Amino acid sequence: MKKNKNRLELNGVYQLDDTTLAQIANFNGRKILLNDLETLPDKHAEILSSFNGALELNGITTLSEQTAQYLGKGEGIGLNLDGITSMDASIAIHFNEFAGDLSLNGLQEIDEKTAGYLIAKQTSHGLSLGGLRKMDDQVAKVLSNMAAGSLKLGITSLSDKGANYLSKMHGHLTLYQLKEISEEGLQLLSQKHPLHLSPDLFERLPAKCPARWD
Image (cartoon, rainbow, N blue to C red; front, side, top):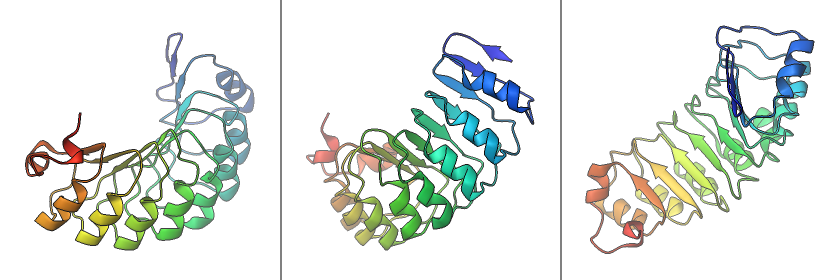
Protein backbone atom coordinates (compact mmCIF):
# COMPACT_ATOMS: atom_id res chain seq x y z
CA MET A 1 0.00 0.00 0.00
CA LYS A 2 1.18 3.49 -0.89
CA LYS A 3 -0.45 6.41 0.85
CA ASN A 4 -0.06 10.14 1.23
CA LYS A 5 -2.58 12.84 2.05
CA ASN A 6 -3.86 13.00 -1.54
CA ARG A 7 -3.42 9.48 -2.90
CA LEU A 8 -4.11 5.94 -1.73
CA GLU A 9 -2.77 3.10 -3.88
CA LEU A 10 -3.35 -0.55 -3.05
CA ASN A 11 -1.19 -2.83 -5.18
CA GLY A 12 -1.73 -6.58 -5.22
CA VAL A 13 -5.20 -6.31 -3.71
CA TYR A 14 -7.48 -8.57 -5.73
CA GLN A 15 -10.54 -8.58 -3.48
CA LEU A 16 -11.78 -6.73 -0.39
CA ASP A 17 -14.37 -7.30 2.31
CA ASP A 18 -17.17 -4.82 2.97
CA THR A 19 -15.64 -3.36 6.14
CA THR A 20 -12.22 -2.72 4.62
CA LEU A 21 -13.73 -1.21 1.50
CA ALA A 22 -15.90 1.14 3.55
CA GLN A 23 -12.78 2.36 5.35
CA ILE A 24 -11.04 2.93 2.03
CA ALA A 25 -14.02 4.86 0.66
CA ASN A 26 -13.73 7.25 3.63
CA PHE A 27 -10.24 8.30 2.54
CA ASN A 28 -10.05 12.10 2.59
CA GLY A 29 -7.58 12.44 -0.28
CA ARG A 30 -8.18 13.09 -3.94
CA LYS A 31 -7.46 9.70 -5.50
CA ILE A 32 -7.86 5.99 -4.76
CA LEU A 33 -6.18 3.39 -6.99
CA LEU A 34 -7.51 -0.17 -6.85
CA ASN A 35 -6.23 -1.32 -10.21
CA ASP A 36 -5.60 -4.93 -9.18
CA LEU A 37 -9.20 -5.57 -8.21
CA GLU A 38 -10.54 -8.11 -10.70
CA THR A 39 -14.21 -8.11 -9.74
CA LEU A 40 -16.53 -5.49 -8.32
CA PRO A 41 -19.72 -6.82 -6.67
CA ASP A 42 -22.72 -4.51 -6.74
CA LYS A 43 -22.49 -3.80 -3.03
CA HIS A 44 -18.84 -2.79 -3.33
CA ALA A 45 -19.66 -0.45 -6.18
CA GLU A 46 -22.29 1.17 -3.96
CA ILE A 47 -19.72 1.68 -1.20
CA LEU A 48 -17.11 3.16 -3.54
CA SER A 49 -19.64 5.50 -5.13
CA SER A 50 -19.55 7.57 -1.93
CA PHE A 51 -15.93 8.60 -2.56
CA ASN A 52 -15.83 12.15 -3.94
CA GLY A 53 -12.34 12.05 -5.44
CA ALA A 54 -10.93 10.19 -8.45
CA LEU A 55 -11.27 6.42 -8.52
CA GLU A 56 -9.16 4.02 -10.62
CA LEU A 57 -10.54 0.52 -11.19
CA ASN A 58 -8.58 -0.49 -14.28
CA GLY A 59 -8.50 -4.20 -13.41
CA ILE A 60 -12.27 -4.56 -13.76
CA THR A 61 -13.14 -6.10 -17.15
CA THR A 62 -16.93 -6.39 -16.90
CA LEU A 63 -19.73 -4.39 -15.31
CA SER A 64 -23.22 -5.50 -14.35
CA GLU A 65 -26.01 -3.00 -14.90
CA GLN A 66 -26.37 -2.56 -11.14
CA THR A 67 -22.65 -1.92 -10.68
CA ALA A 68 -22.69 0.60 -13.52
CA GLN A 69 -25.69 2.30 -11.95
CA TYR A 70 -23.91 2.76 -8.61
CA LEU A 71 -20.69 4.01 -10.22
CA GLY A 72 -22.58 6.28 -12.59
CA LYS A 73 -24.41 7.95 -9.72
CA GLY A 74 -21.17 8.60 -7.86
CA GLU A 75 -20.18 12.19 -7.21
CA GLY A 76 -16.44 11.68 -7.70
CA ILE A 77 -14.28 13.94 -9.84
CA GLY A 78 -13.03 11.04 -11.94
CA LEU A 79 -13.54 7.37 -12.77
CA ASN A 80 -11.07 5.15 -14.64
CA LEU A 81 -12.37 1.88 -16.07
CA ASP A 82 -9.70 1.22 -18.67
CA GLY A 83 -10.03 -2.57 -18.36
CA ILE A 84 -13.49 -2.52 -19.94
CA THR A 85 -13.07 -3.52 -23.61
CA SER A 86 -16.71 -3.33 -24.71
CA MET A 87 -19.78 -1.45 -23.57
CA ASP A 88 -23.28 -1.32 -24.98
CA ALA A 89 -26.05 1.16 -24.36
CA SER A 90 -27.58 -0.90 -21.52
CA ILE A 91 -24.45 -0.19 -19.46
CA ALA A 92 -23.59 3.25 -20.85
CA ILE A 93 -27.00 4.67 -19.94
CA HIS A 94 -26.03 4.48 -16.27
CA PHE A 95 -23.19 6.94 -16.87
CA ASN A 96 -25.39 9.57 -18.49
CA GLU A 97 -25.52 11.48 -15.20
CA PHE A 98 -21.84 11.13 -14.35
CA ALA A 99 -20.25 14.58 -14.48
CA GLY A 100 -16.62 13.77 -13.60
CA ASP A 101 -13.72 12.72 -15.83
CA LEU A 102 -14.55 9.32 -17.33
CA SER A 103 -11.74 7.17 -18.73
CA LEU A 104 -12.66 4.16 -20.88
CA ASN A 105 -9.40 3.70 -22.75
CA GLY A 106 -9.98 -0.04 -23.16
CA LEU A 107 -13.02 0.38 -25.41
CA GLN A 108 -12.18 -0.67 -28.96
CA GLU A 109 -15.48 0.24 -30.58
CA ILE A 110 -18.54 2.27 -29.74
CA ASP A 111 -21.98 2.77 -31.28
CA GLU A 112 -24.06 5.94 -31.57
CA LYS A 113 -26.39 5.24 -28.65
CA THR A 114 -23.55 4.39 -26.30
CA ALA A 115 -21.64 7.51 -27.33
CA GLY A 116 -24.69 9.65 -26.68
CA TYR A 117 -25.06 8.40 -23.12
CA LEU A 118 -21.37 8.84 -22.34
CA ILE A 119 -21.29 12.52 -23.31
CA ALA A 120 -24.65 13.47 -21.83
CA LYS A 121 -23.25 15.24 -18.76
CA GLN A 122 -19.75 16.10 -19.96
CA THR A 123 -19.86 19.85 -19.47
CA SER A 124 -16.64 20.67 -17.65
CA HIS A 125 -14.73 17.41 -17.33
CA GLY A 126 -13.69 14.89 -19.94
CA LEU A 127 -14.22 11.60 -21.72
CA SER A 128 -11.19 9.54 -22.73
CA LEU A 129 -11.55 6.83 -25.40
CA GLY A 130 -7.87 6.35 -26.11
CA GLY A 131 -8.25 2.71 -27.19
CA LEU A 132 -10.77 3.51 -29.91
CA ARG A 133 -9.03 2.97 -33.27
CA LYS A 134 -11.99 3.21 -35.65
CA MET A 135 -15.10 5.34 -35.59
CA ASP A 136 -17.87 5.74 -38.13
CA ASP A 137 -19.23 9.11 -39.16
CA GLN A 138 -22.47 8.80 -37.22
CA VAL A 139 -20.58 8.27 -33.97
CA ALA A 140 -18.48 11.35 -34.78
CA LYS A 141 -21.72 13.26 -35.29
CA VAL A 142 -22.96 12.22 -31.84
CA LEU A 143 -19.64 13.08 -30.15
CA SER A 144 -19.69 16.51 -31.79
CA ASN A 145 -22.64 17.33 -29.51
CA MET A 146 -20.40 17.26 -26.45
CA ALA A 147 -21.13 20.58 -24.75
CA ALA A 148 -17.72 21.30 -23.23
CA GLY A 149 -14.90 19.64 -21.32
CA SER A 150 -12.46 17.45 -23.24
CA LEU A 151 -12.64 14.47 -25.57
CA LYS A 152 -9.71 12.13 -26.27
CA LEU A 153 -9.99 9.62 -29.11
CA GLY A 154 -7.44 6.99 -30.14
CA ILE A 155 -8.64 6.80 -33.76
CA THR A 156 -5.94 6.43 -36.43
CA SER A 157 -8.05 7.53 -39.39
CA LEU A 158 -10.82 10.06 -39.93
CA SER A 159 -13.09 10.70 -42.91
CA ASP A 160 -13.84 14.18 -44.23
CA LYS A 161 -17.38 13.96 -42.89
CA GLY A 162 -16.12 12.83 -39.48
CA ALA A 163 -13.61 15.71 -39.43
CA ASN A 164 -16.40 18.16 -40.21
CA TYR A 165 -18.51 16.83 -37.34
CA LEU A 166 -15.68 16.86 -34.79
CA SER A 167 -14.63 20.38 -35.78
CA LYS A 168 -17.93 21.59 -34.33
CA MET A 169 -17.41 20.02 -30.91
CA HIS A 170 -17.06 22.41 -27.96
CA GLY A 171 -14.11 21.94 -25.61
CA HIS A 172 -10.72 20.28 -26.05
CA LEU A 173 -10.29 17.59 -28.72
CA THR A 174 -7.25 15.29 -28.58
CA LEU A 175 -6.37 13.06 -31.55
CA TYR A 176 -2.71 12.17 -30.96
CA GLN A 177 -3.01 8.79 -32.74
CA LEU A 178 -4.59 10.20 -35.90
CA LYS A 179 -2.48 9.49 -39.01
CA GLU A 180 -4.78 8.99 -41.98
CA ILE A 181 -6.75 12.08 -42.99
CA SER A 182 -7.14 13.87 -46.31
CA GLU A 183 -6.04 17.46 -46.86
CA GLU A 184 -9.70 18.43 -47.08
CA GLY A 185 -10.41 16.67 -43.80
CA LEU A 186 -7.45 18.37 -42.17
CA GLN A 187 -8.65 21.73 -43.45
CA LEU A 188 -12.04 21.08 -41.83
CA LEU A 189 -10.43 19.91 -38.59
CA SER A 190 -8.18 23.00 -38.51
CA GLN A 191 -11.24 25.09 -37.63
CA LYS A 192 -11.40 23.34 -34.24
CA HIS A 193 -9.91 25.02 -31.18
CA PRO A 194 -8.54 23.78 -28.84
CA LEU A 195 -7.19 20.89 -30.93
CA HIS A 196 -4.35 18.54 -29.97
CA LEU A 197 -2.66 16.49 -32.71
CA SER A 198 0.64 14.67 -33.17
CA PRO A 199 3.51 17.05 -34.04
CA ASP A 200 3.70 15.72 -37.62
CA LEU A 201 0.02 16.26 -38.27
CA PHE A 202 -0.03 19.62 -36.55
CA GLU A 203 2.66 20.84 -38.95
CA ARG A 204 0.34 20.05 -41.87
CA LEU A 205 -2.30 22.48 -40.62
CA PRO A 206 -2.78 25.76 -42.51
CA ALA A 207 -0.45 28.51 -41.30
CA LYS A 208 -3.33 30.61 -39.98
CA CYS A 209 -6.23 28.67 -38.54
CA PRO A 210 -8.15 28.48 -35.26
CA ALA A 211 -6.39 25.22 -34.31
CA ARG A 212 -3.07 27.10 -34.13
CA TRP A 213 -4.37 29.73 -31.72
CA ASP A 214 -2.52 29.82 -28.40
